[in-house]
Structure formats: C-alpha cells, structure tokens
Length: 485
Image 1: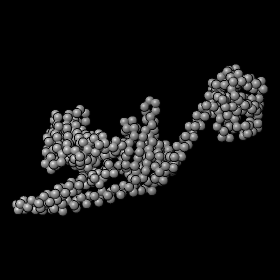
Image 2 (image 1 turned 135 degrees about the vertical axis):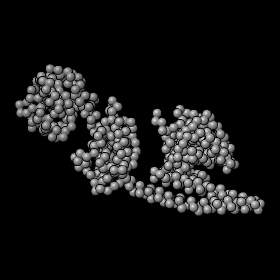
Image 3 (image 1 turned 45 degrees about the horizontal axis):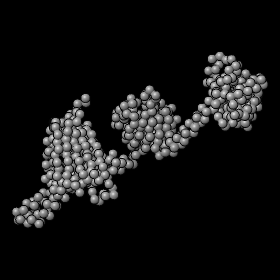
C-alpha cells in the first residue's frame, strides 16, 4: 500500500508501542503513528488526527477496549479497529468482534499485524464503496416514478420506497409493523391468480414477470397497478427475496376501458349498415351483369372489394374487444390441419390476382382446434404477406409435423421487418415500417389477434425476417392442447 497510513495507537506501555512500530517498519509499511494512553487524548486524536486504522490494547489504566470501541461508534468514525493485546480466551475474542472490532492480534504474534492492518483497511474501503453505491441506488429508488418493494418468501414486506407510500398510502414503518401480508391489499377477484404468480416466483419457476392487478389503498380506494417482479437467489439457487417495481396505471386503465367500449359499440353499429350495403351491392352487380354493363359492373365489383375490406376491419375490432373483455370463445373439434390450409389458400387465391400462393404442405395430422379461428390466422398471415410484398408475385405456405404438433409457415419476399421491431409486431396497435405507414394501411391489431388465438390454443407464433428480402411467420399448434403431457 503506497499511500501513507495514519495509525492511532491506544497503548500505555511504551515498550509495547515500540515493538509494534518496529514490526511495521520491518514490513516496510508507509505509516504515520500517533500513540495515546488515556481517554481524553484518545477522544482528541479521533477528532484531530483522522486515523485510517486504530490499534488498541485491551486493558489500560483509565479505561479498556470495550469503552474505546463505544467511543469510536459514538463519534461515527468508520475505520478498522484492531485489538492488539496479551493472551485472551476465545469467548473474549468473540465478544470483542461482536462489539465491532475488525480483528485481534496477540502481542507475541505481531508478525500478523502488518497484513491485518492492510487487509482491514482494504476491506473497509470496499465496504465504503459498497455503501456509497447502495446510497446512490437508494437515492434513485426514492426519486424514481415507480415504487419499489422488497418482499420475503411469505409475501410480507421487508422495505418499500417513498413512492410506494404515495401510491398506497401506508408508510413503510406502519405497513411492516402491521404484520399483514401485502396480498390482503389485492382486490378479491384478482387474489387467486396473484397468489399463483407469487408462488411461481417463490419456487423459482419464474424469475421475472410483469402483471397488472387491482389493489386497495389505505383509504379503501381500488386502483390498477402494473408490477414488474424479479427474484434474487442465493448461491444454492434458492429464492432469497422478491423485488418489485410498481406504478399506478388507474388513469391509463380507465382510458383503455373507455377505448374498448367505444370500439365495441362502433364495431357493432357498423355491422348492420355494412351488411345492408353488401346485400344491395350484390343485387346491383346481378342487375348490371344481366344488362351487360361491363364498365359499371367493374366499378361495382371494386366497391364490393372495399366493402369486404371494411368488413374485415370491423370483424377485427370485434375480436379485439372480445379479447380485451375475456369473451373470446373457442369452438374446438378435431380437424385436418392441411385441409384447413388448402381451403384458405384456395379462397385467398380466388380473390387475389397479384400473387401466386403456393401450397407446400407436408405430412398432415388432425389437431384439436377451432377451425374458423385457425382459418382466420392463416387468412391474416397471407393477407399481410401479400400487402407487404408489393414487388413480388409469390407467397409460400408450408406445413410440417414438428414435435407433438404441426408447424405452419407463411413466407413472403417483400420489404421485411427490422430486427429490433420483430419482437413487437404481435403487440396491439403496433405498426412496423412507420416511415411507410401510408403505403401499408392498417390498424395494427391483426397480428395481435393472431397471437391471442394461437396462444389460446396453447400454440406459439413468431417471425423471422430480413430487410428487403422478406418475412416468414411461423405458427406451431399441438395435436391436442388438452393433453398436458
């Protein structure tokens, strides 16, 4: 250690002080040492000498090492305290260490002292750095817009931040002293699945998650909260504690509910006039066909195509609101996977003249699923493939048996999706290629609905894509999702 060490030595035997100084010089330690032998001089040296380490004999004429330790603690000086004394019992050594001594050296073994001083100072520096980092972390936690909570394995709060107090109304001290589990503050209807999520965290089955639930505040109000939870494990892999960030999303949730209600009303109200327009459009087409008015008939067909497109948008809105309100119903039965794929491809090919849709189906298998919703997923993926590959003329649809299920892929050769956007394409209202949104219109809920449908049948959906080369969307569905094995 190159920096000079300031050593405060509490010793009333001059020969012992000299022996210790000689041992330190022998070890070539760069130090400055001040020797004091009584309580007043010791207290004065603590204030004015600012030591890096304190060496202390145990028994002095005016006081002992126990009182010296108490004085050091009272002043708030945070430096190593090493006891250098005559022979002592193990019980005495344990007592002194519990009181705050960093180490102890027997006087007839002074060769240990130099390394004990260096190690104690280095350890203290490390503790000071850790403490400073902890203080910095706590500063950010206390001033963050999200509340912070630390839980034990039983669901009781160990600590929480000021922001958490602002969200729920209880101070940290009041809540901890109440000895109530925080789950007592979860809205009753949400409690069963919140307990399940907590059990998954405690068992280590899930290491982190994000959930939304309703909570009850100190004044009895019900608020919506979003929780970001993670677990901290010990070296044996056991969950030691659970840490959560929480924010009050009540206002956002109310806006979402209003939005969902609006979309639900809008989509229902649009269905009747759209159906009427569709019927009258078909009547007009029949009349124009009879009259042989080819030009007007062509315009009527284009109008019908736009009505079909609008109808699809309305159906997507209806599905979206059903998903949001947990009213998405599955009518499942055993179906031949490849037959559904062929039917959808045939239907899509009839109404599309810009792209050839190649059916590259492999081995087939029956699966337990909702036929109409499976067709809806494939229809959406093919429609997107056509829309986002305006300069290509081919779409490839493939199927194959994969593990205990069937894998479907829809490949296009279009504009592709940026790598950083690929994981977001299944989120509601997410739009890729935002700079070109006007070129590729849509609401951004089609893939979200596909994801919800596939997930609802215990399947998986994902995408692989390269910019300007195309995208391939994959869907995997189990043969029978009721078979948990």
